Image (spheres, rainbow, N blue to C red):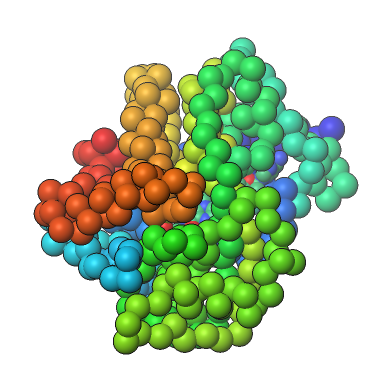
Amino acid sequence: MRSLRTQVAIVGAGPAGLTLARLLHNSGIESVVIESRSREYVEARIRAGVLEQGSVDLLDAAGVSARLHREGIVHHGIHLQFDGERHHVPLSQLSDGRAIVVYGQTEVVKDLIADRQQAGLPLLFEVSDTAVQGFQDEHPSVSFTHAGERFQLHCDVIAGCDGFHGICRAAVESRLSLFTREYGYGWLGILAAVAPSSEELVYSNHQRGFALLSLRSPEISRLYVQCDAADDIANWPDSRIWEELQIRLGVDGWELAEGPILEKGITGMRCFVAEPMRVGRLFLAGDAAHIVPPTGAKGLNLALADVAVLADALTHWYSTGSQSGIEHYSEDCLRRIWRAEHFSNWMTSMLHRVDDQPFSRRLQLSELRYVTSSEAGARVLAENYVGLPWASSRAPV
Ligand code: FAS
Ligand code: PHB
């Protein structure tokens, strides 16, 4: 086994791991990023689409936002639709001018990988048999196989950025408290080569189920319909998907343009939080530590918020020797995470067909009418959707 040495070993080259690596590099801290999938696979994975103001500011500070500002689309509002009516929620007007940027997670990941490669910094794809050890006795290391050779990467700290199905949380799960809520339904998402039929996102609560109109560019639409979490994509020919979208998003005088479907898939929905997010010298960040239902567009943004806190904490530790930042890492992140869990659960419960009880539906419609008619009600949605302000430098409140 070949020994290597770095300061921070980062497991996972998703948005959390790659952004952390860049933030640490800007602070003069070395890291090695290891990833189980190929670069092509990671860059092709269709996921999130909406960046909060805080995430855009973080990527600006990290120095990797040039293309985001060239190609990202700034939005100042969304629409909520129910009972055949579409209501605009002026997000920026209700949140002191904060906005969102529509820029696919795939694009964020491509920018971060290109940046890392251009700087000639260590980023290893297609590693296998990854394991973490020694993080309890201050001699952490990550072992893995790459290009047929076995390595042991000795480090000061391990950042577990390997997502919900990764090995880092699994390595400490018996020491953690896990909190979870399953919804029993999921989203069928499509990427279609057709201009979006609305300039801003449309979230629709329909008797047949939820639907969302989103986008990736002026030429590419991103659309979702609620389906059973256990449903099989084979049950959804393109014609059925478009038929459901037309019904669930339709309003008088408006038509949904259709086009070739480039990609489709079903993703389950759950709330999940693992506490604490630190065990010794192992720090969990992003989906490795928490999952939110995508209705609030928080998953990617929470991952970036975690690594902003972790990068600040590690920079403080390396520069002053003080452990105050790393000792408060978990507590500082969990405050924002639980706020996002609550908001995402609220949006999900308000917009999805949850059961066929008339009482539930009337409660939902009452809530939607309130949020779209009361400034106070709309402000709650707006300030959470664009993302609550981040404190001081970068760390979120
Ligand atoms: P990621 O899962 O993105 O990255 C983890 C990385 O670790 C992966 O590249 C994985 O290959 C790698 N890895 C795993 N095990 C490893 C090992 N043993 N060794 C080395 N590497 C390993 N969020 C939204 O805000 N809006 C959305 O619409 C939305 N849609 C989603 C759709 C799907 C299908 C999924 C799964 C998630 C979606 N999310 C959405 C949430 C998503 O965007 C995540 O929040 C985001 O990817 C979190 O980033 P990371 O924490 O970096 O985890
Ligand atoms: C997306 O564009 O993929 C998207 C947008 C908003 C959400 C979820 C997903 O709430």
